[in-house]
Structure formats: structure tokens, C-alpha cells
Figure 1 (cartoon, rainbow, N blue to C red):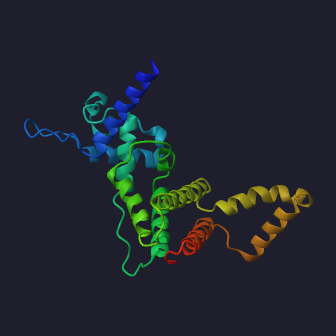
Figure 2 (figure 1 turned 120 degrees about the horizontal axis):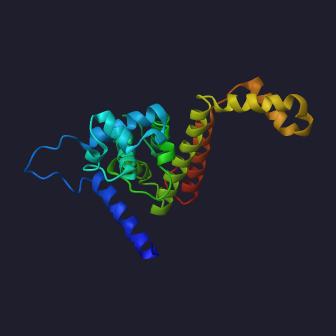
Figure 3 (figure 1 turned 180 degrees about the vertical axis):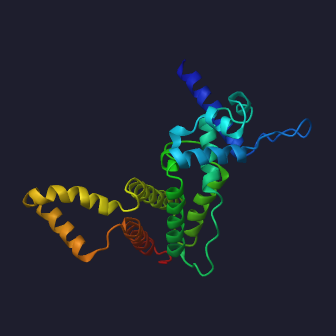
Amino acid sequence: MTGAEDAGAGGDALAAALGLLWDEHPAPRRGPKPALTLGAIAREGIRLADADGLAAVTMQGVAAALGYTKMALYRYVPGKDELVALMIDHGLGTPPPFDAGTEGWRAKLELWAVRLSVLFAAHPWALEATTGIRPLGPNELAWLEQAVEALAGTGMPGAEKFDVAATLAGHVRATTQQSVTANGEPERALEAVIGRVMGTHRDRYPALSAAFADMAARGGQDQALEFGLARILDGVGLHIAASGGAAM
């Protein structure tokens, strides 16, 4: 296949996914009512992925779970890539409005990041699925819209608002991934692994040994999400203030 053909095939796949996500090809008004809905298909894919990971999601598996053949499922969804795109958007859902009394860009972004972390923890497969350049659905864009809108009035350029949202999302993804793989206590798990080595090699790594000893004495483990979030927003606040914008 030539480069031009590759680009065409990729464009067709992107168009198909966007059509599903944005309902650009509604069902015809005439004829029998469709037996399946995209929502039902996405929910079944999510159920399988939540239970056994993204690798467990196949067109055959989703179709069988719904009581249909794989060929019947292809009438609604062209392939797994489009299915996963639907699952991401349905799994994220519409971002809830900010709680009453949540004022200022910092408080809003803190709540936004925590809520996103909760969603990723509930659907760990989404950490794998939401990487790279891919079609974005209305719910995922609504989450981005909410983060960017929280920075309205700060005087930040549009590109910087996107960068803040991307930085926060990256931090959420990284800390949630660590938490998921360590059963919710990543720093304790790391301490257990490194502690075994420090017992006999602490003199070789004095700074690390001292840090772990202090952590054990003071507590405060497994606060990576909150600590990193606070430091990121501290930096954003300093940048806004230096640019003459609203500090909070």
C-alpha cells in the first residue's frame, strides 16, 4: 500500500469513528428499528474491559455477550478501534458541573483533576486507550472544555490553557496508573521493594535511604496525586501573576 493509500485508509477510519461519536449518520426513519444501540454496545465493551482489561474486548466477545453474531455487530461499529473510541466517550461521560461554591480557576482545576482520577481508577483500561492522536468524542471534549473554561479570566493565551489542561491530565494519568498497579498504595509498594535493597546497600545510596527513613517516620505516603497537583497549580499561579492575570 502506498503512502497516499495509507493516508486514505487512515482518513476513512477517522471519519468512521467521528461519525459514530458525533452521530453524523443517524438511523433512517423508515424500516425496522435497529435491534442494538451504540450505547448498549459501548456499555458491554466497558463491562468486559473493566473486568479483564482492554485486550479482552473483541468484536466477537462483545457481540456474543449481547446475543448477536460478530457480523451483526459490524452493521453498527466498523471495528475495534471505533468500538474503543465509543467506550472511552461513554466511560468518561459528561463532566458534572462544578459544585456550588467552587470559585476561582485553582479550585475548579483541583476538582476537575480529582474527578478525572476517579474515572481512570474506575476504568483502568482507559489509561491505555487514551494515548496518541485519535478521534475525540463529545464527552471527552466536554472535559477539556471544562478545564480550559476554568482558566477564563486569567489572561492566559489559548495555547497555555491547553498546556495546563494537558499537564494536569498527564499527572492524573501517571499517578493513577501507579495507584492501579500497586493496589492503591504506590509509594508503600515502592518502599517495600526498595526497602529490601536498602537493608544491605543503604551506604551506597545515602540520600535515598535518608528520604525513605524520613518518610517512614513522618508518614504521608501515597499523596503523589495531591502533592503534584498542588505544585503544578502553584506554578500556574505564579505564571499568571507574573503575566498580570488573576492569581486565583
